[in-house]
Image (cartoon, rainbow, N blue to C red; front, top):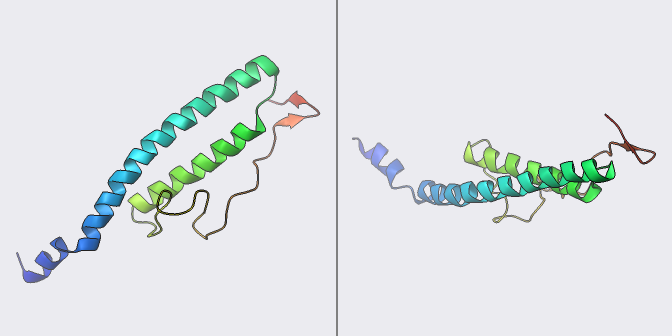
Length: 112
């Protein structure tokens, strides 16, 4: 093993990235559970009220973006660490997600 390879093995930032990746893998699993609960809630809302819940749509959109940000960091596409290392809801360009997803309700009637 050459000296150059040994320096890569001793690089503290590489090992710290592994620690961050483990934390984010746990966060990913928790986020999956939240998304699963949101899916179930939305289905039940549609089933019993005939429409979906706008707050749950926003929550689903935020968690979808969060999972995307985790995957981007863990696959080395991005160096920006997502929550809990950054503010919740910040995207790759640093803007906060505030726009709700489009509604699938037209005049109070569910479409589709």
